[in-house]
Length: 567
Image (cartoon, rainbow, N blue to C red; front, top):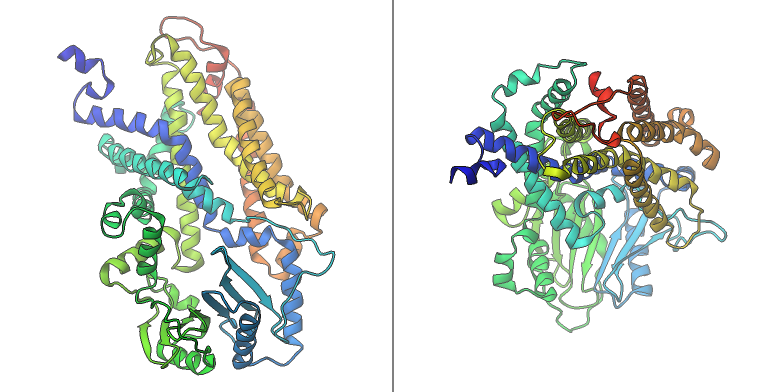
């Protein structure tokens, strides 16, 4: 019995040792995936600025539209609503839903319309706010088709793999919670560890760095992992929904409709024209205390139609509340009776719905403004550093102490892990910055151009993995870090050569979204260059294991860096 317990790592020692085993192995096998999910999630915090930088043609269009609007008299909200309604009646009379975005919070800006097409897909058109005519692409104008910053959002929660990816990320998030809790139990001096860092001490330095960033961001990481799981709880725990609604796709749609659109009527089959929207909009604005953002007409042309008026959130007000929902007033199209009223920050469905809304807002930082977004970004980077240092620490510890954990295959397994470390940490950075390079280099007008950008991301990551396994670890680290630094530092140059835009011009024009993207990329480039410089100075040495057997060169060449607290 005793022999059986000792042969299994989790069974050795007491409770704390078992938690240490759980923390080490649970953390290691998920660390590469968690690093990728955490890093891309951190970048996704600034999805909109990244998308703005990746669509430079829109900069000129926005400036031209602003100049045009400033030079002509403003068009009334009433006229914009009439133009939007007329367009939908003329072009999409059979759609099940019309959605009009008549103006910005100041009453100007774009005029856009949306609807569900025959395939049930969300479709859109932009109308000229001065004439009401549809704006179409200029002949010869080439669009930069791109996923923009949304690529990082999608990869963060489903790895671009749909439901399968969602389940994989969910498993990783659960493993992260296990690793965090077992890590807290393992460390006896968790708060003292936060103030301890001994540079140039090899394994000890990596452990101190791992502890410091872990303790610093522990509440954030617990929150982000838990809220991430809770957001997808219907996928991971579908029993309740399946019991009451069924398991097929129609049942799921019915559930989603009832959850997000409570009280939605059925078609009556009796024709009725869509009423004048202006009185409903003006009344809705007064009831919810917000300027109109969108007007949604369900079942247009039917006597059971209803009209929803949604408001614009005020940025200052949004910083003071947890729920990011806007105000909403739902009217009966036939009688103009108020069917539903939701004040800004409120939800339908009581406390459970409010809890879900707050959890979503906490995870996606929908409230709190720019300052909170930067706090999330810093904590996200610290969390990524915790996973990276943990994975590197695993290898550094085993170079001298536990080289027989996998029997005769130990050296090969450690070599495999070192290659994964290089590709997961430095290689992912190369893939991310290559995605931005692809945005500038993939020809405009290319069919499925956004897929080509995405392909560059994954191909560069795969090449980084192959390179990490073909080259000795220390050399692979240096070469990939050098490439990462070069790609980051040269991105502004590439931007000038391909679009004519430059960092100084962004600053002078007050385009802080584009300037922020390039300044952040340059900062990452300088950090990568500094890491490469320190790695390059580490002399190569030979390391032997306890049995005085020389390890494969690929397994030990980072030991020189270890002597200086590097890898």
